[in-house]
Length: 302
Image (tube, rainbow, N blue to C red; front, side):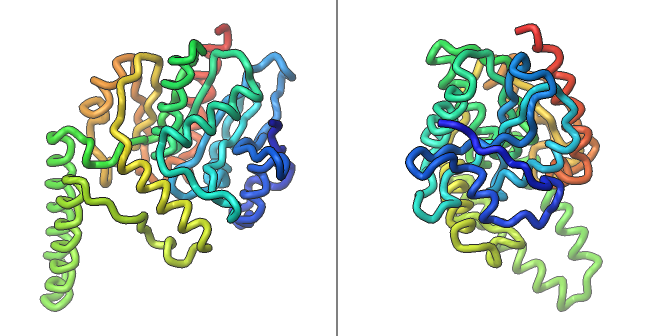
């Protein structure tokens, strides 16, 4: 199984969906999630850095990180299965991780492995690390870029803190509206609160965001399956090195990532990035890339 190598302009945000799908296929007989996003500066001596995207559904989400990541390591993107209409998306995180693990080993037969996951993609890479270690393969580190499990698995302290913070935010917004607008917004937010409480107790719907309804059908399918897989995946303990890059503006996530990850991943170091979740991989990708480059250098002697 060999990886496709992307040779186009990775900085262009208008890269076609078909291009992202083609990158992740090596041959019709042997599909691979791997795409070589940047070649090694030091030839075969530098071990690869493997990265996967989040619920946006495409490795093109990684373009800003790749642009800013100044490292001798070759950079491989891992595309979730399902962009190709002939292949159904995986239904569980464990299946996604096995798919990725096989592909990673095909490029780098021996560890230690350097793994990076953007947003919920970090859950997949954490599971990859668990499977690698269980198989006797060393992992240098797993970098989680503002990664959180589904809110149903948050400690009650984290869930309540986010709920109170968001309720205060919405109440302040409603107070600045006209009476008619305020009533409509209150009804909408009350419905959202019911959904959050339902999600806390296990109710799972498909993925929803601003552009989801206008996305191509196969991308909507991939996102929906991915979201359901993550919603059903309880985070599990991992004893290896974890680098957590946390958005300093918490928005819809817990303010203290340690409250959630500290018990599960005792060997964790947290780096706060001065932005929110969305801009970590956009306008502030250079901050994230700087941390990843520095941590890759620290373990270069593995």
